[in-house]
Length: 343
Image (cartoon, rainbow, N blue to C red):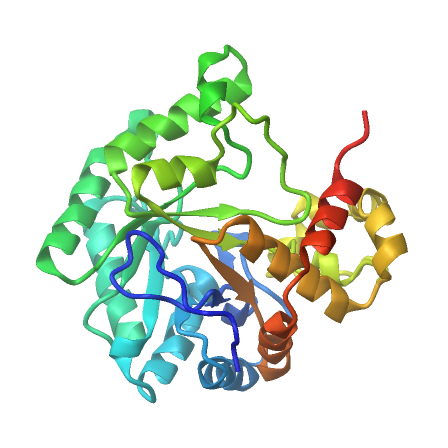
């Protein structure tokens, strides 16, 4: 069972399990207008058994999106909701990537249609969190204001509990002062934040996430100041941290990793180099790295929930059981020291 106490994530109206089930992987292989967006080697029944087992182990947060498997992830999660108490789980989905028609994903008609389909796929009458999955609002942000209006209208109607949006992987409020690409990107996100007014943001965070100066306000501190919750994703580096010894593999044209630069052989080699000092100390056992990755994130952001992907019962079981042994303060110090960039 999940031993980590539930967490109160600002923006959500009930406590959630510290570890949430990230349901992108269970969508399986897929393409969206010719772009690979899925994952190979996913058996739907094994994935559903993984969802059931996650719930049995105490996971109460499930994060999906309309584009994951073009609806398959939501439908599998819907099967789970038919077997459990809906009120005891937190269900999050997203809109903004699935280009199922000629309309822009944030066209109001498209958004409302996708929301109706999402509820049908999940077999529920409400979502606890509904997020904008993309920051592409069309030329000159043509669809930004209407997308925000749709979300706030849905929240007022009580069919969604909270509004979410993505946050940058690299971010400090102070960067907005500077005239360089990172400053431009920071100003852009801060403007979107003010216009969307989210309750929850999601961000990537893992062992190699950037370190910040004491006078810099990162996304966790920013969210804390604004009373906004945080969900952490890709804490395992999309599985790369658990496969440090494996040779690069080939992926199908429906697997996003076939075009993701992070999975190119030279970049996987560079990743192993960046983690070399910690590998020398800790070895290459995937179970060890699973514990390090999850516990490091939970320690870094005690007010956030961490999402972990899985394909079957064994993978979600390994994630949950890895949390039975917390990292000691000296282990946290060791990780931070060994991963600190040398100058």
